[in-house]
Length: 599
Image (cartoon, rainbow, N blue to C red; front, side):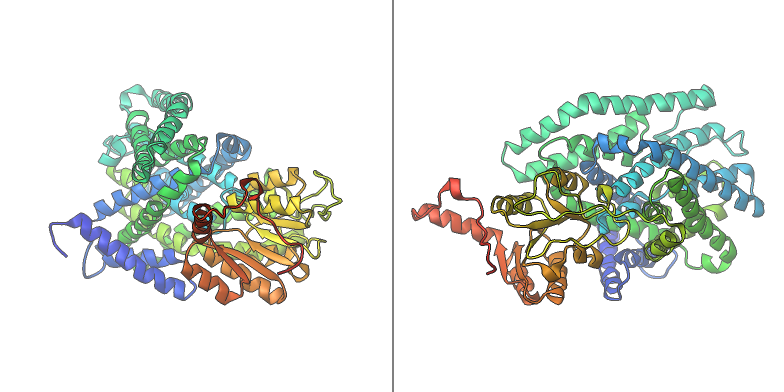
């Protein structure tokens, strides 16, 4: 590769190898992020061959963190954030304190100073934004209550780390280090002459000022900008506006208010979520979010020296135990203490059993302040790599432990009463088949419906189909995983099953064996194909109707057993032709009509 184009070389090598090893990992049913980490190790300075520019990779990864937190903010409202403050704030603080104490203990055994132990413990206490959000997104948990708790917990951790970054330089002399700050931390630093409490006060005032500016000014300006650009009719300009707002607010938050880039981006997304165009904004930023989050894992892999596993074997195992076991146990106990179900406690524990980007920043700052020895930075990097690799396994472990723990403690969530929906059912009389608030605390009970339609997804397409089914007085239930949508459906008297239809237990609760029809209103053809296979296995006679966006998706779903696949673009073209040829349907009667008899 050309030696004078380090940015291009880093992107090409990072994404290219990430694709190769991600595909191999997926082929062997290993999470793709393992392949991304391996790609990073191969292009890093600790292995032979091509070496990518680590500083450029880190900056590209930071963009990924910004865009990812911006995307989470788009699906998160201020009401959602405040709804979990009672557990997220005390839970995160107690867990940070417990993990820091464990880190101080290990540092003492290794003969380090108290200052080194504090930096080391803090670095082990904060979870990776990218890893946690990726895990929640893959399991479609972002919009569930447990997902909101995890994200709220993460935000409190981020705020605590911002405070740590500005306090450490002021405390460096007291803790035995040198009061100097590296380039990365200088954005957040304040003069030590203010004193400890002065630094704390100014930092909290800056964070409060940022929140006020976003709620008062941003709440008006950001939606206005989006609507103005949308009315220009330029998709390119709209996409550019979304990215400019996300990156601009994040950078401005860090420069002007001392708030982390990730936290600034999250608030930008949360403010933008109040606009009617938030769904489109999320779609436009998704490709870049995915690409740059891959570069984050590559950049983490570049920092890892595989030979350190031999030279620091026992300390690395102890570090990993603090991250994976110590933090998990602390989070589990804290969530249970707040009387949440075991399933929620286990999910939060698994989500937080890793460390990432803030840990690296703290480690570099600690080394720069002469507080943390270089061995400490190596242990933090090794712990991060190994905990990220093990994180998918943690979710498998908690899934295995959940029924056992519920049986031993008798704390399984009670099933919610269910009543079938039909022509004689009054609105508001139907309880959800799922557990309260969409929580999947064990296999949901099977519906009593028979001869019904199973509607997968209740977005823009699914809601129209559901309205038609209701108008026709046909019995149906909806499988959905968004809490807000589930709550609205319950209020409207529609029976629901909360969760992902590709999950065997969730789909079984909809009684596919006794169903007449399966309607797949979700846009993801791959996920829809999995549901079609489950439906055909459970009931070969069921009538399967799906949607698609391309001829390839139509063929894919037909090949898996779908009876009817409707392609949106083809239906639009048909409607235009009918108007042009004078055979247009009556607009008033354009609502979907569904034959009560199977096709």
